[in-house]
Image (cartoon, rainbow, N blue to C red):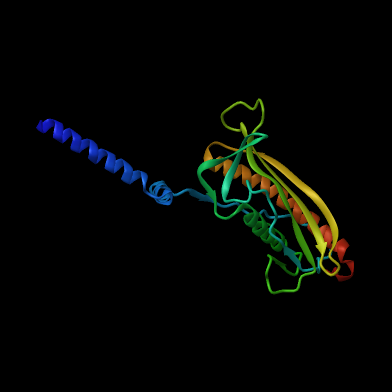
Length: 225
């Protein structure tokens, strides 16, 4: 009789605890997962050094707008495409900033470091600007090509930016162009990030040369030495 009573008490206690845990808010469970999981590793990319041609400097001051991007790219997560129609992200890895803002900041740094523009700023800077560089991120991803197999160098990185150079005094598009580059990823997450860095360096180098040439065309009356 005593054993039967203890069994019933145990069953009631078990049901109570089950109901109590089921009643916990979903948000609390999510916060517990985040707090108990390891912090992601943060990665940054670097601006390239561009070998600029000689001749006159550009006199136009330039603002680089934040590039637009699809929601899948407009994130700090590192994109991996296992097929043309699917998108995943590397676990435990994040960019130090959202990809569009990170790329725009690196474009500002690359153009400014050429020394060929009187000023290169990001959006919102309290300075007068003559030209604006804007555009779209069409690809910023790691992927594995069909038939690439597995192992080191089976993963590639693709970066593609479509940019527009706009003359602000009349809001006219001076020129537009797409810049695309690919690079092989090495082994491990560091190798993937190195591949991203190499592909973006190639794009930003070509972008800087093109922007400089087009700024001279857009405002020839202001070009100087």
